[in-house]
Structures are given as C-alpha cells and as structure tokens.
Length: 507
Image (cartoon, rainbow, N blue to C red; front, side):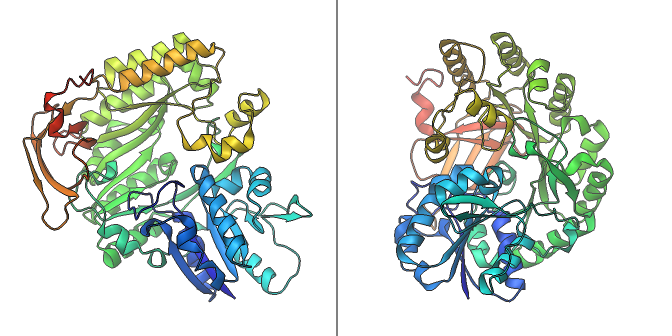
C-alpha cells in the first residue's frame, strides 16, 4: 500500500514556490509515526513548488493508494482543491486531519467529502485506520466517515498521556533543510536577532486547561506536557542534525508550571541558542523574566486580547488588566521583545470597552502590541454564537471563502455603523506612528541573492545602529517590522522611497 502525505499550502491563490510559511508539526508527527510502522510513504511539501495545486498533484496522486493531508481553517479552500484533484486523477482513499477536521468534523466532512477524517490527536488513530483499510474490520476510535452521504463518527479516542513516548516529527520527508536554507531575518519575529536564522519550532505540551471563547479548544482538551528532558533532548538533536540556532517554543500553555519553565531556561542556556516562547501574563514576575533573558530568550508572545475587565470576562480569559500592564512594562524593561494583540469585537464589546483598551494601548504600549479583531473560528464558542444569532448566514461560504479575508463580523450589540466606525479607528491608529519607524542609512543588495539586502538603520527608540543581513525584499516599496538588537523594541523599517512621502497621509 503506497501512501502520499501532503503538507499543503495555506492559501489557494499562491502559485509560486514560497518559504514564508509556518512548518506544520501536526502532519510531521503523523508522517513520523507512519514511517515508524514501516509503511511505504512519500512526502510532498507543496510550499516548495510552483504552479497550481492541480498542476503539482495531477501526475502524482495516481501513483498512490492513500492520500493524506490536513490543515488549519485558513487552508479550507486548499483542502477542497486537494480533494477535488485527487478524486479526478486517482482512486486513492483520502484521509484528512488537523484542527480543521477536529473543530467541526460534521460540517467539514460533509463539505469536503474525504473518505475518512481523523478527529483530535492522530498518531494512534492513523495506524489503526491504515490497518483497517488493508484488512477491513471495525473502524477505530476517533474517525469520521461518510455512509450513504451521511457523516458518521466512531467513539471518541482517549488522548495520548505520555507525550515523551512519541517519535520526533518527520522533518526530513518535507524538505526541512530546503526550508531552513531559505529563511531570512525579517521572516518571523523570532528570527529578527539572527541574520541567518535556522529556526526550529517545537511543542512541549498539548491541550489547554482554559476555556477562551475564541479558541476551538474551548470545547475542552486535557492539558498534558512533555518532560523538560524530552524537549531539551529534541532540541539537542535538531541542533546537531540541522545546525539550528533559533528555537520557537510554540506552546500556548508551556509556562503554566513555573518550575518546569525555570528548569527549561536553565537547560537551554547551556545550548547557546536564541529562543522565544508564549506565556500567560498571570505567570510573569521579575525573577522569571531575568532568568529568561539570561538564558537567551529574545521574545515573549502574550495573549492580551483586551484591557477591559468586562471583555476579558466575556472571553473567559483568566487574566486581569493589572497583570497585562505589569507584563508589558516589565518584559520590555527586562530587555525582552513582546509579541501580542488586543483584539476587538467580542460580543461584550461596547464603545466604552473599546475606548478603554485603545486608550491604554496608545498611552502605554509604544507600538509593541498589535491591534486586530476577534475572528469566529469553527469549533469556538463565538463561532457557535455567530451561527445561532444568524451573524454567519452561509456556513459553507464562510468556511471556504470569508475566512481567507479580513471579514469582521459585528458580534456586538453596537449598530453596524458604530462597529464600522470602530474598525476604521483601529486601522487608522495601527498606522499612525504609535509604532515608530526608521528609514535605512545604507542598503546593499546581495550579489548572489538579489531578493536579499544588507541594511544599516538606527532604532527610533534607543537610537542605536542595527545592521541586518539577509533581509528579504523583492520590491522597491516596503514596510517591515523588525526588532532592535539593543533595546528589543520592534519598529518599522521603511524603504528609502518613503523619504519623500508623508508617513501619516501617504501624500
């Protein structure tokens, strides 16, 4: 039985080779476990090839008995096309997984119509499902399927308790070296302090004990974590195998246990790599910030969401405004960069709560926190709210079209006119200079890679000179956010063409 595993693109309109994407760990874990069982498997990373989805797949899928893939909700349209092309040119069985299936299995299966969908964690399910396809018996737990055009689901599967026992993700099969070789300094915020980043993303825990309304995991998933030794061993392996110099710890909830976080900081300090992580503002104190800084942590990503206690309560966000304020000010004071957002438009949002958050942002954040809007992702509590209230009227259109664009739904009790006014205020303020900018003093184009620049620029916050190499740009007009290597504030670098343009008005 020949198996093809596809790492898909995120967007359907991409037609060229593109390395500006987040490497998918979920599908890499599945590939690793299937290989470990000895199956005949081929991996295809669609991001690394030019052409339409059909032009890449039509001559490939016919050679396989099983075609597997998975994606997040933004990639729904891509999955539609992968299924269509596979059906057109092959008789292969199609298996899909990932958060797209897990968060809303009934409707996803009904629309996409794969042969099987894997719900929740797939490492155990996929092996049992492949054995079922080879020698049909009772379907395993954790599988969705179609029967007479009706969606059926087997019993839910137990979550994997011992994460340390899982093999490392399969990076080799999806051309990870090629991905690393094409990274650049302004690609991701965790790359900014290293001119030639070779960044490795890693997951140290699964599940979440919280119930935030905008997250599909609000349906409930038991929190489990790997041992610090297991995580450090994988990082050591990655450094040796791939010459990794940046670690992106992707867990939303890794720092729930401060003892483990402290132990991790002690151990990663010995490896001499730059790294970033995600923390809750409730777990931050001066002592841990000092330790993280000394261990090589460049950036902390926080989930702020709102400064209004009313909105935070509505979101079921277990944090306080006071702790948000402490985290922002003390993290920057510790010389660690911040990645975070205030997102507007929760059902409890009013003009007063909006102004409360926006005024705090203007007066305290110095452009270091982004502004955006709540998006109703399938499986989340606010998605159900939007369906029940008729705010999302066409579920299929939303899943396949609207989610690809900045379509902000008015979930509040404000009128549509009032909500539109708020969206305009947000976008105006996001670009009004609250985040400072600088125009390079010197630019040199790389003779070997014409889309890469060497840039000399002064930080508009601390005034120190920064020299960035391997800076990606393939056009004359650009604006790029990047982190100062002295004060760790993020600022916008503008191409020299802006020299004669009013930044506020564009005139």
